[in-house]
Length: 397
Image (cartoon, rainbow, N blue to C red; front, side, top):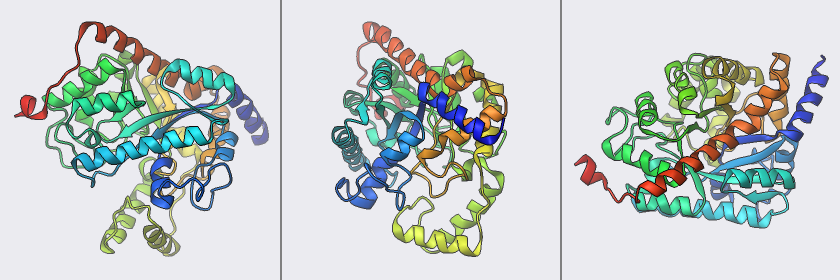
């Protein structure tokens, strides 16, 4: 087949089995760029000058469901993080209300299927970083009641009860309270997201959980040796758990040459008093100037496909998915420049011999099944277990 034939076939497949994307940071980008003013930054039209995401490009990309990240940075302390998370949730509510002909709020696997049948994009929420519950299981339950369907246990820094992949280990995985967080998430029906966490935290969570886990935006460490990626022994545990690992597109995590370049670029930013994770206009300007003098190596859709090939080989086709991390990364692979690019990835996988059945699992069925399975576990646990009111001090001293 010619490339155009693969692309046409990819689009046909996505019309029936659209992408469930595990992670998109549009709400935080809207906060940073427009303080949630959707008149000022209207995603009904072309926002490509400042965002990776708008509705026309979501449609062009074949997106059928999106987990919107209700992320807040680790720098926000205590209840400030809780308040900011509530504002992020409100942002997603504003999006689904304002753009209701295209977006449908979704809280269950059945809601996802209903949205697909209606030709709308199911809009779910995932909270990124356990600091957003401020050590409170009641807050965790409140976030679930407001519609949050996964919690990433850490972001880039440790929380008191779990280690991050990008911080110095303290807990050596999960503490006793961290284990209780996982159990309470199981009881609620909230997916345990293991992106961003340390390998020991991954293993501890898989030991404790009774429900399938999610990696909302992580790739294969064997393909690119970065701590944000999943080791093979953990990928090998997913068939027994039932979980799904959703490959990310962030070049600094998936492309070895970019990993080295990114390390040098981070040093450059820090020397100018900027965080490597800063996406403000000032940081973007400094980043662009650096890239002019030091051109960035370019990952491609084939780079992501290399990770998916490996993840399928180790974990099996029932345990892979896609989590691009659009609007949460300063750079993207060629061909996956924004949310319109998913057909290019599917076309690349078709060129590699992936079947339509396998691709339908990758794009849609695996993610829907994981949420449905978590719902079933929660129904059973709620009949047998009352809500936990344990605290960090009670369990961890």
